[in-house]
Length: 378
Image (cartoon, one colour):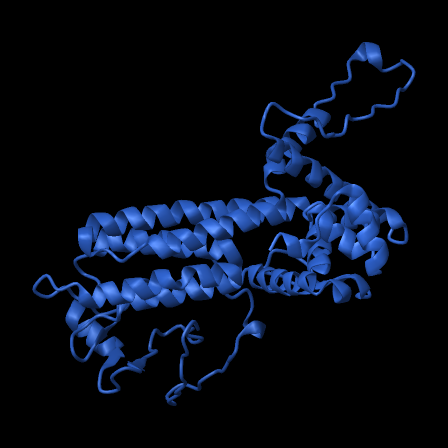
């Protein structure tokens, strides 16, 4: 995977004249790439550990320990203390950088590299296991996996500006719930809410991108399970705790399915394939053209619970509302359907209190319908 597509995007891009020294701080998550412009393989480097400045990783120390003349691609750097660079910490930074640059796909590749390296080089990677003491590795590995849910929530769910992510969605949902409790402010707000703008951005995002992004996320779950199995195999009861990460992944998965309406992906692809499989035979070429109308999905109650049917009906209403919002933005249809969907979650006494502001008519209607005011429930 190419991490940086062009040098123009680099944070720093300098040419160091032959024979001169150059020094710079490489921060967490950044890559440091050296290119020999002259082709004489005479580039020398010295890396100083931020945790212990007296420990320096250099080409000379590495060549001496490996007893080689040249450094090759993938050579592990050693320090003047004879220790290899901390592989687990590097993997942690690598996952963070790749996820930031390439989203779910970046985390997939980071997790794949992690469980592959751990499985193949467990006895050799730094920090070295001394006297069966795994404490250092446990701490580093716990830090590696603890960062995963937070990184996933920062991945963009849209491919156009604004680049909304799951953190944005959680914040918008929180603000929406606060406004719902303040009914007067909620009804009198002008313009679409943050959550409605988020929904519109998802609606404007191509289904191809949504499907691809969702598939990459499911690949994240697959590689995460492999990493867990690898750590369990290598460390047994000493393996880091996975419970909180599993719970966070499950919540993220559920939210992503809801946002992308992922249950429709399979049906949508099947319909597209069926519509594309139109065969024209020689006997049909001279016939009168006919209009082919594809049958659109509609709400049909299934042999399942009422709650499942109800949820499916609300999804159909939402799709209709999205259509009118995109094609007839000035029509009241989308607005009324959105209100209907929101009202569907309210008990009758709350809905009456929202649509009838005057207390006297409200009491009359409640008495006529036999509806008890809210405070009598509490």
